[in-house]
Length: 229
Image (cartoon, rainbow, N blue to C red; front, side, top):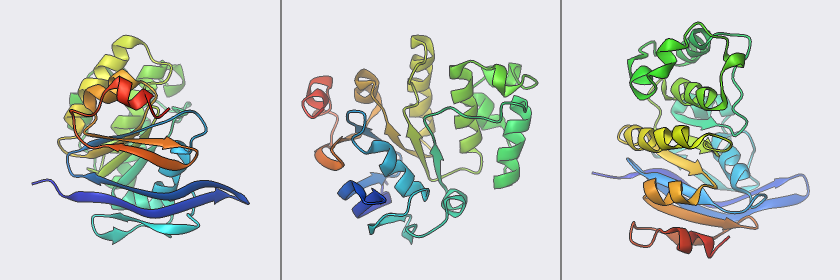
């Protein structure tokens, strides 16, 4: 039975004197794919960073699995099972794919890579390649594969398909559905057809505020999302 795994209540955040988020309320249930859509500069990345502990909110709360995350260091939030995958697709370029995964295993004590390879079979063929020589799509696979080690409760994924070829986007669409069977997903994404294909719920963010919540498959459409952008 689905239950709430992540809850954000009255979240406000700022960079210095510049307020970016205003009274954000949102939730993610177990097994859900939740998407945030909005124009560049709307505050979507700031929202993910605030949940993940990289930015301390000025007020409000973030709770995961009935545990208060607000005030935790980012590495403790990750250790608890809420992991952030940033937009920049940064991996350890001078290390091989294998070594990148080993670092993820060292942090989580999870050395079972079978699930990673099941989601991304291509990584098996790239194990000895330096991560700096991977394509953007291959780096995204590696980042997601590294993040699912330790069986996280929630993945926060920022613009996962940006700059990727259509074939890779199609693969990620399928993979996100598979991952959601074990780990809830909160995705910031500009690709509205992808969002509408996979999301169970969509939040539209504008000027740091949630201006709409589309909470069922019937109401989630490209036209509905575009109305709030």
